[in-house]
Image (cartoon, rainbow, N blue to C red):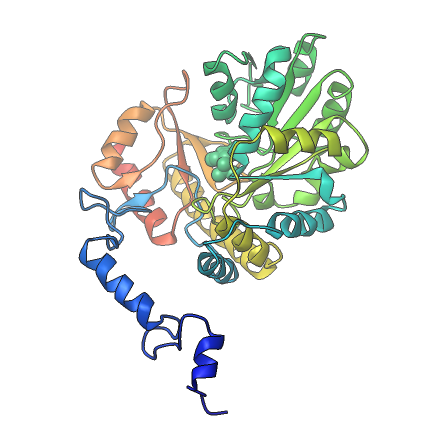
Length: 388
Ligand SMILES: Cc1ncc(COP(=O)(O)O)c(C=O)c1O
């Protein structure tokens, strides 16, 4: 059908007809406005004021320090994000409920058991604020402690760290023994960060079940989808069975959306309501729409997982050749013992534009490297022998 440029059709589009060559969506008025804005520098061409990249690594930098998934976001997610950008003038509306429904459906729970936040970090901060004032947060000595520290720094929590097993696993028996009537929260991370290790599924479920009779247990499963058998390892079943357990997940890892910021928890409806009301941000429409669009994109999930495995194999082959100890990883990072100070290795690699993590606590000669793009991992594998 030919385009009708009659006055009537112009009016029915509100601001005017679309202009060819401008993506079919800019009107004459918008174009003038855009040119004026460009002239005063409102579009900084994706550069920070010092000329560096506004988002993501500089070109030439192998960013292997933050456990991101550089293959994301999925094409499906990008469509949702673009749609949300078009609708960016409006508060997100029903998108939250829609995403909660999708998540609930996958896990066989009700939508009121889902709390969605701006990254799972926000939910974990809220949980630390909710339970920290009751008593210590009991956790393994090494875990992703950023959110517990957030509450501790505010004077709202203390962390009671329990030594790892000799093989660097989470010592579930010792953690259980450390739980007292005063405990505010038990926080576990499975698979753990920075070790990358999964706990034995039967052991963790049994320990969490017992501990949850005494206190709330949070299981941070940010990397669970990267494990070989997430369904067999997750503690979500314990939430469904009515135990006082909270499980957190994120779109930052397997879905490659760390910059889009969406995470969620699964817990009893009352607990979830409390997390929602404690969380401070209103999730961006871009996050909600992007997450809705890719949540069931299993082709992308499988692709991400295969790239992580490929990279992990390259790294473990390199570490084997160097005769270095490393922990069995179920995640997109590997924790290895180089025998040299981790901070020195970090510095030497940074000089070659390869970024990895430095020292954690007093684990002086343990380093953590993330699975980035294959070419970047290859650079790490070639460079490591030259710096150790
Ligand atoms: C174990 C763990 N949990 C949670 C997070 C927070 O991730 P996000 O806030 O992006 O969901 C991270 C980030 O690296 C993490 O390693």
